[in-house]
Image 1 (cartoon, rainbow, N blue to C red):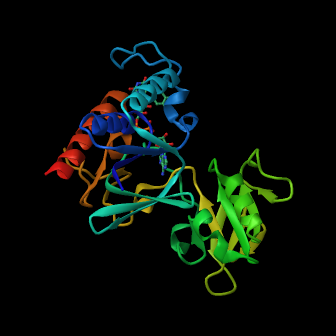
Image 2 (cartoon, protein in one colour):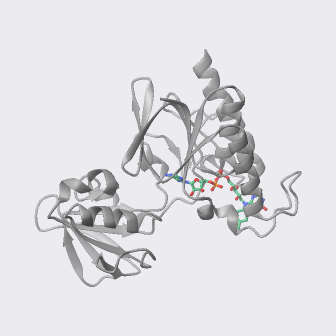
Length: 283
Ligand SMILES: Cc1cc2nc3c(=O)[nH]c(=O)nc-3n(C[C@H](O)[C@H](O)[C@H](O)COP(=O)(O)OP(=O)(O)OC[C@H]3O[C@@H](n4cnc5c(N)ncnc54)[C@H](O)[C@@H]3O)c2cc1C
């Protein structure tokens, strides 16, 4: 059991993780690869004190280096769910689970737009757990839909399990093996299937493809999809000044809790959330 898991390896998450370790607790960051962080697109940062003039990538790399030096553990992957369980949390990452006593969400603001019909069909033909649940669809028709970095890996895993898998998206995943079908489209819509608990995937308002399940693989999850019952304030996670969410033991920091969407604020909120999480462990 990890003391504190931080989800998201941007400035807020890295700051939170360093400050958890500074208080003598162990901390694991679960994050997409650094190349997927929006800050890597910034050619030059001029308003973050002491690192003026550096590129966003350089700032992030320095922050990561300092986090590693502080003893932060690191796991590359997409967190798919955070489930409270008595006095701790169970976090699903790909086909693995991690247990933590406290969780800090630092997932940034780049939440995906859900596909039309996605929300209405969750548990009724739409799922997010391709790695975990794929084996239960052996011999069935399964679609992977999205832009996540691990699409090809998920498709290959399902194919090897004997699942009839096809990948749908705007761009073919570069490492998708040629023997797994890929269907390109721009607009996707999920509708009721002919049979109970099946769905159709409508591509570009044309052909409808029938499936037993569509595993939606957004690169990031909406916060309240990631954590069921999480209270939102519009597009942002609702927190108090201590970074506490409505779920005991769950904190949030950085862009995911609101404006201004800036590094300095993210770093400060990461510190506050870390101190509150650690204080609750120590009390
Ligand atoms: C082009 C550009 C230029 C910018 N310039 C400046 C500037 O000059 N000065 C300034 O102060 N700010 C600037 N910003 C804003 C700054 O990038 C953000 O305010 C800051 O990165 C927020 O940090 P964060 O940690 O809250 O979120 P992010 O940096 O967005 O980090 C969140 C991380 O979590 C990951 N993640 C999300 N969900 C999951 C999940 N379920 N599982 C695993 N990982 C997940 C994301 O992939 C991402 O890597 C700029 C932003 C952009 C896009």
